[in-house]
Image (cartoon, rainbow, N blue to C red; front, top):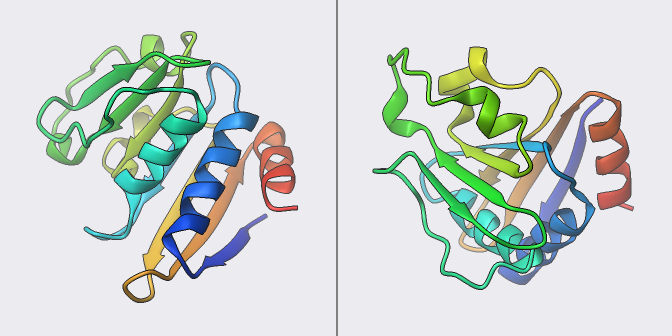
Length: 150
């Protein structure tokens, strides 16, 4: 099952991400794919705000992962630099601990990702407009998408 939503202004992206943050629970994994500038980090910043995180959230490209405290802890991973790497960063602790996890460039660690997760592809249409494709893997993620997009 695939869900799709077109967003025409930045504020809609922010509202979507904040609503998603209010629906997730510990051990939820959200993966974000999209070209550079598609809005993965912007989406994550609004998601963090929706979790009640007040710290500045920026891309952890050089550190791979940053952690933030909010209603739920947030693990924010940017695994772009792990391409062609077999490094294990303690995936079980990351994905199955008490946090929610957002992974940018997730296809690079596909084999390490939980089987059940919400994959989101962001496509840039123009300066402000984006197309979001939601691919829920697992029943709880289908229900999450239904709730998010109603």
